[in-house]
Image (cartoon, rainbow, N blue to C red; front, top):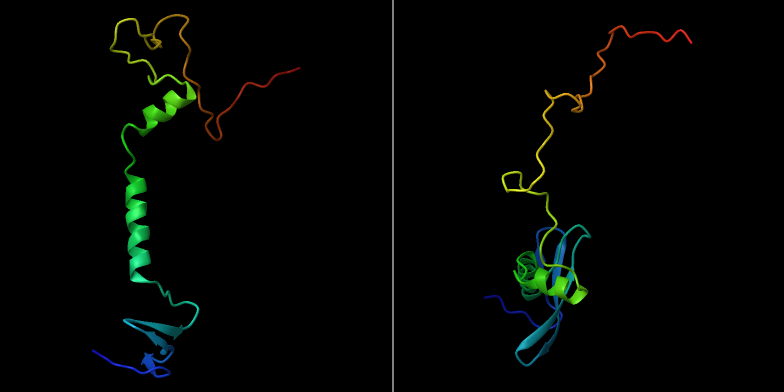
Length: 117
């Protein structure tokens, strides 16, 4: 443990100075002089931010359904139909007549017909 009186300083490395500014009961006020690139954060504030971020990353599973209900939206998704289900449209067979043909890719240097018009 290190004890300091008001006005006394602690040096950390060559460029960080911690100064005791005031003492009140069980707490003290300190001043920190450090280069701009040095992050200075209170541990309890940083912990609260991390906890809030973790909570936001794992929303309530029912939240989406409640929001949709409030907006009057359907809770069923309008996803692409499953081709395995009966009544679902089937993909076109390229071998059948009338089926769309895959686009031909132009190769560099390949000759192309010239339109005389």
